[in-house]
Image (cartoon, rainbow, N blue to C red):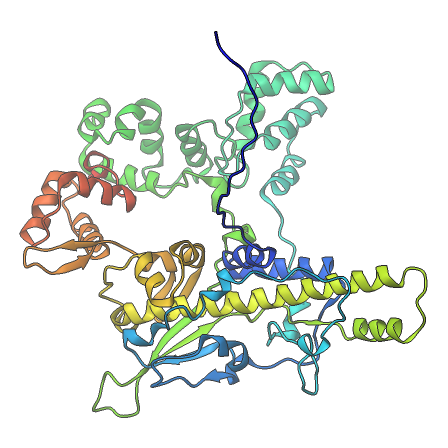
Length: 528
């Protein structure tokens, strides 16, 4: 017989919980520059204690942290010294163990409803009496509105109005344009579009009539828009092309009669089927290669999220002593030119003093509680931004320390993983991951995402460990210089790399090739 009973047990468990400040700091840490600007503006709207400071701008280019030669900089001084840092080299200067780690581990004290506010903690003892979070050096530009850009759908609708269409066809055209995907293709079935117009507008449209309207839309600007597949997209662009274009007619014939062979790059079968020479095929292929396979993405009107705003600028400044080529400094600058400058409003201290100087009235305690909460929230937010800046600078300085050769010459990336950075700055790997994700650095040699500098090592035949980034660069060069008539297979590429001293397995070559976006050998085959 099974006995059923209820018992009460007491147990202790150890759990790690993040304070509200820590959660806020972590969220701010992973935001890139553009999103951080928006987040600061949102906080200003949500917290009346915060306000924009448009009077006390400081040029960040004049505030330089003079740490050249100091191998153990205090990361906490960045908020006083500015956003530029001079780094003279050496991995030891990358940071001090545990310097910024306290930003993750300090728990905030609970708000005491009965305490008075320590206003000295909120206002600095200087002429401005404000705690600045960011300095804006482009005040003359920040209020200029962005120019209006006409979107693709709106442009198509304007062009449809110029077509000779009746009311039924205009409704169908509007439904087709509204169904176009961002890359410019129409992946919605045309019968479903006809049914939608019949249901919403009460117009019955035949299939052949709908096909005619669709063909007219496909010849609008950009040509090939609303195509249902790649072949239809390319044909529409060729038909919109000037009829006197050399090899245009042959290109149309290839897409119409030999498309299965063309998409698989079976050029010998195309020549046999159409009875053409290799030179004719080459000219027609050049015409086709000039076409846009994704007309919707060729717009100049890009989403703002597609623009990259570097979070850092790093460049090498050579020493005045020409005899010593290694005595220069790295200048590390954190970009925040468009960052709103915020401060804690002085008006709320005056309001607090006013409430404290008079007799208690109805609602005074609620008002003081509101001010207390908003002041604490404002201070936490500003401190989180300052901690974010310090952490980002510590990570960037460590990356420069470990990749000095690249930032000096543009070549020679060394193997480096997240753990290498985390150990040197005394932080968790997850924190470093949040910093490098979506952040970019402007260098003398171009703009790079911080994740670009993290890669595993590969041991060569000589026992030296090199970055797999170097292997990928060699792989790309081999593919670039290969004979396009007989492209190199993955096995051949592995053998060529082995001859250069890099023993890489074929499956690893395949993985690197896919990461680089290089097609398989068959799809790289060309006419010449």
